[in-house]
Length: 145
Image 1 (tube, rainbow, N blue to C red):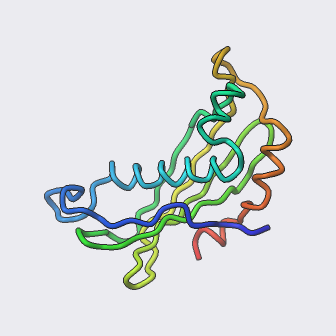
Image 2: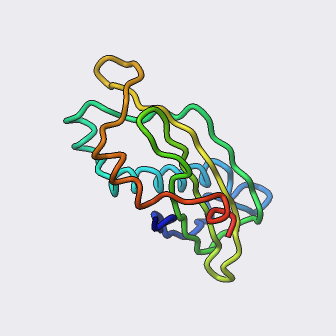
């Protein structure tokens, strides 16, 4: 088990900040979405594989826990891992850290179910994808670290 892996490294732009002076929620979500799709590529569900295999993962639940605000100019990284990954569902975890002081800014957890993109209904994830995802299994302790 390798656990969490870096999936995004970026900077908060001034235009991403709201009138309170910190990064708006939509941009936290965008960073996590980028991290999620990076992770999907790492386990073999890159864009072409999704098209060829007609399989995707539909989000059914998302929970974000804000710890610290990010402001314009702050550098940050997103690390991603899986709390659970099996044939019928996936629980993805993210940790967003401010790089200047290594302070945890946000943790997030999302649940998804595999869907057949042609039939538009639930399906099961193939064994090769499940096996590939095992190296990114993590624990709740890893996320909060």
